[in-house]
Image (cartoon, rainbow, N blue to C red; front, side):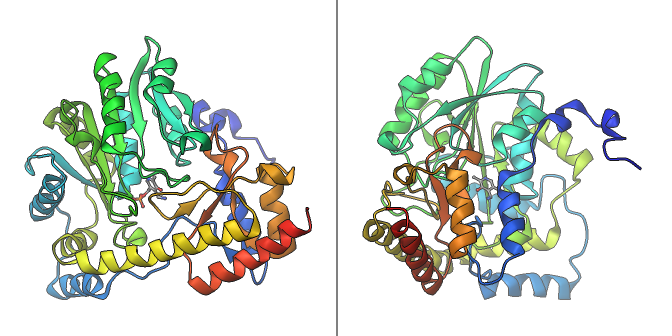
Length: 390
Ligand code: PMP
């Protein structure tokens, strides 16, 4: 069978989207020995023991069935309380949907609100799924580049300049992957004002909401007038080191949740019951374990920022998530060249910033969810690499 023989059978939207730029680097790094990877966007901690124990106990008791399409009511009640503490009330009965990770919630949200040709405003650099998922949902991604000079924040002016009569959705992500940027309540209020004026919907991916180091997180839906025009996405992967459990949720007005549930019930049925029971334990009793992990990330954040300063790599101070996004423009290399040469010469894996969209061209993403030893060694290797280019 020749390659490409089945190409005409493949959906055109699927054909057009490129494979993830991150994957290519993982594959390259996986073939080499002694690589320190600052590439993965994943906690290096194991899920806290009491959460794993709740899972084991649930299996012991025989909790092995489907749940309601919406997810276990008790879990939805805990989520409602969690969001309530952030200043926004959702009815656990019909305003919260438990999903298979934020990944599923994002896909459902986009497919629910986009009609063919609708434009989705996406501040970039952004999480690698946003643009392809928008295309797959039939929407048109419109990127709004943010830059290091603005600390990678979205400004009302930049947003307004990108709005057209076809604009329907703004896809926000603060704290941000890949930049680590955060936005204050005052800054988000200015965005909310534009959202209201142009009658936009907002999908707000707040998966890093607990991972903030320079101030409290503001839930976008908690801003005046924003609750009913926002779909809030959140999950357990980052805050509780539960990436492999595949659990997240969406919270929105009952009409959006009912529409999202229609897709979810036919495509996914429900999220896994074991993960749901464990997530309940995370929300009820996981605060101190989570805060312990966040304190570790913060120490490593300071370590990597100090390290970059010492080796002469400019980097804006990220206020959240677990990524640093240093500027590599002064090396004269493109981000892809920098990442490739660093990997080959010094066996340190970072991700070239351009894979995250406009604004990331002269930066690389370094995850600091790695051990202090690995970070220290990686910084030493990066220092050597830069020295050779001076
Ligand atoms: N949104 C962002 C911004 C992310 O960084 C990630 C994971 N890297 C996801 C969503 C997907 O998370 P989940 O594991 O909950 O599907």
